[in-house]
Image (cartoon, rainbow, N blue to C red):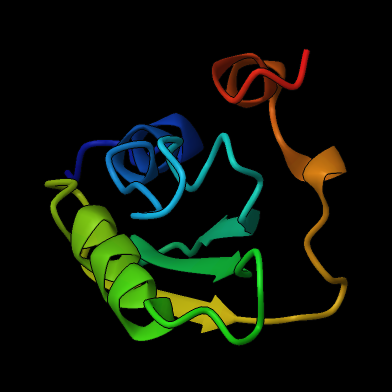
Length: 103
C-alpha cells in the first residue's frame, strides 16, 4: 500500500523554490494556482509567473517540477504554466507581503 500523498506535502515542496528576483517562495508569492493529485499519485501543478516575459521562466518551471518530484510518494509531476488569470500582488500571502514590506 502506498503512503497517502497530500496537498500539504506538495505545498511544502513548492515552498523550497524561490523566484531569484524576489526573496519569497513561489507558493507564498501566489504563483501556484492549483494542485491536483490523481489516484496514481501523479501531481499536476498549475502555476503562473509574475511577468509573462520573466527571463527565468524555464528555470522556475523546472525547479517547481523537480521540487514536486522530490516528494517520495510522487510518481509523476507535471507543471502547467498559464497566464490567465494574470498574476497580481493580491495573490501573495500575508507572510510574503510582510517579507517584502508591503504590509
